[in-house]
Length: 305
Image (cartoon, rainbow, N blue to C red; front, side, top):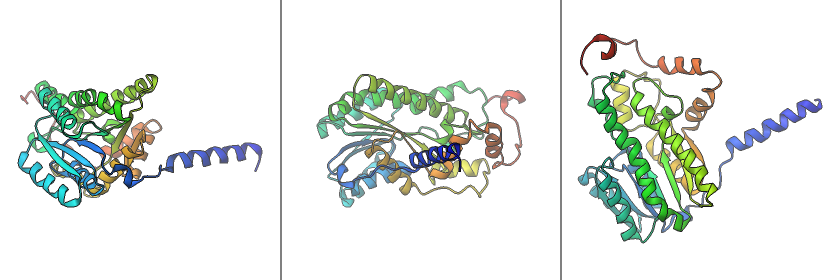
């Protein structure tokens, strides 16, 4: 092997090490940690609440359904949470965002982790999600899935600054590559990715030691994902990953202050990295898991949305 060959081999080895390197996670580091997790009534958020509880954290969770929050916090206490409290509210409302962070400040005396996970749209709420020009729907979606993330982060940053804490943002591969029937959802996730990448750089420039971890998630076995698969007759060959494992990957990523985490790694990482190399092929593959359309968007049929 010539000099060039050895150089290329070394570069590939360094690249492989960088890709597969995972910082050591110390579960004890989360004992007593003060954590806020949004969107915890079901799915990934609920599983994160239980995982943090098992690790002995002090956790405040949010969702709209108070009855569900009572059940989740009760189980968290059984699992070992040092403290488990909730705020029932709509994160699309500024006053509920403010109440969430203020409650954490008053009850915990500070904050170590803010995990932004909530989502405001059920895929069953409309017959189809081909973009149809429904600006009112888009506005409502953006308010809760974009603006509220930034609002909560802005409210929490002074507290996180005091503790050299961590900001964890649950995103999606839809915010890296986009996919059909989710124009509105992908738009907010692309926006969050751009905002928090930029925020991370501004924090570094100001010597603010708050980490920002962006989580790129693939297809996870949650109620919205199952509804999406059913509504759009998505191929059953696309297998959903368990939310409990996903929750632990997010928690580890935040605790080890990683820039990005990908889960499931194979789908989320490869999908993200393939986009700039073969965008047309990737988009074709994403379309191919859906059957042919039975009707066009209302934009092209003259029907009202």
